[in-house]
Amino acid sequence: MTRLLSLIVAVLLTFVACGGNSSQPQPGGETQKAAQTSGQINGAGATFPNPIYSKWFSEYNRLHPDVRINYQPIGSGGGVRQLTSRTVFFGASDMPMTDEQSKAAPGAILHFPTVLGAVVPIYNLQGAPDLKFTGPVIANIYLGKIRKWNDPAIAKLNPGVMLPATDITVVHRSESSGTTFIFVDYLGKISPEFQKTVGVNSAVNWPVGIGGKGNEGVSGLVS
Image 1 (cartoon, rainbow, N blue to C red):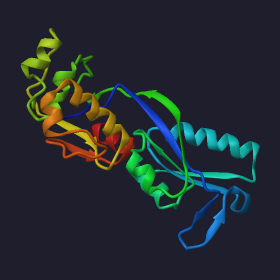
Image 2 (image 1 turned 90 degrees about the vertical axis):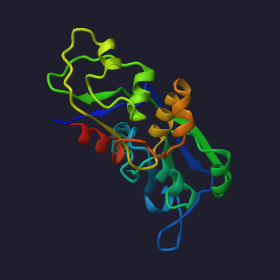
Image 3 (image 1 turned 45 degrees about the vertical axis):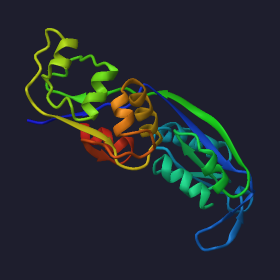
Image 4 (image 1 turned 180 degrees about the vertical axis):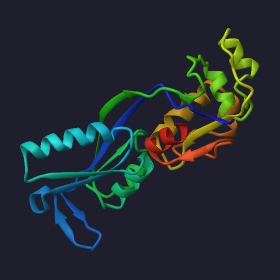
């Protein structure tokens, strides 16, 4: 029986980028003043901060019923694209916008951190053993060099644990994601081979694994 593994990253910081212009083109081509006219502020981007954003925006609406903040968790890359195309007032990304992306966005961009959180490796293995991993082992799993749960490299880190001789099915994000950027940046630092063959970006060509959309998609595949 195949087991699922998702190994993500240690620490993740979400940034919000807001357009400095007070007007925003709408899908119908009309320009609309920010919340003063529509009563709604649209945003999109990273899935990681969505739970706390939902809480914050709900509480703000409770105190200010005339203002609704609509946030779509479509991934960091989507947030940057929508901000650049001016279909949202703000975008959230776990990867800071590059100089090139900032220049492509119309008007001034205000860029600041909003959420700091921990993201941990998750796996689904019968009996739920408390396993230990190292950076090089994780890198080799994502390179496809470690394919079995009872691989000697994993067994050495977990003496006494009965590891099955089953395949590891690796799970990663399918869309452009700031979480992906942070994770591959880490793997590239501890594994020169990973840096050379996979590289560092918000979307990469994974050597192995299946993709899930958003954090919810990844956790759903693992479960």
